[in-house]
Image (cartoon, rainbow, N blue to C red; front, top):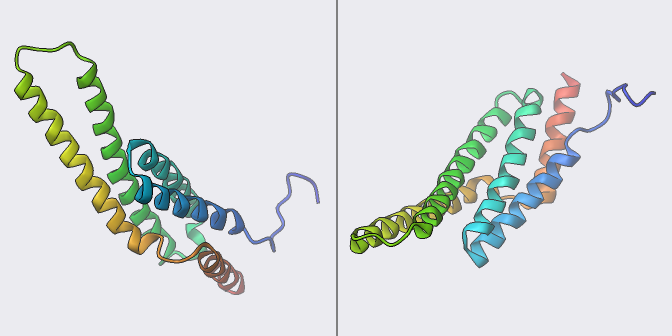
Length: 150
């Protein structure tokens, strides 16, 4: 078999399990440490998972597209929270204005919204990252085997 040929019996889900494990670990780091950087890192790992699920959705058409949709919703929450981080940083870098109380109120509201988004993302985790990585990988391999038997 050449480098360009595909082994039709190979299991394409091993990388998916690794990506899932990396996302789950990033989520735990965000939960333990908090902060914009850790939540942004989690978002990147969740996006990796979403793209792989979308690519492999033909394996289990009734399930994987729905999981990919849920992961997309999670990444949207984390993206919006990251956007608020960037907006807050931009407002902090502006020179002081005559309306300091107004600026403080805007920054406080941005922080409140960001924390609400992080909270919603962590709630979404209970469904998306509930399994340990080994169990997730085993389930994906079972889907792959079932698709090959059809």
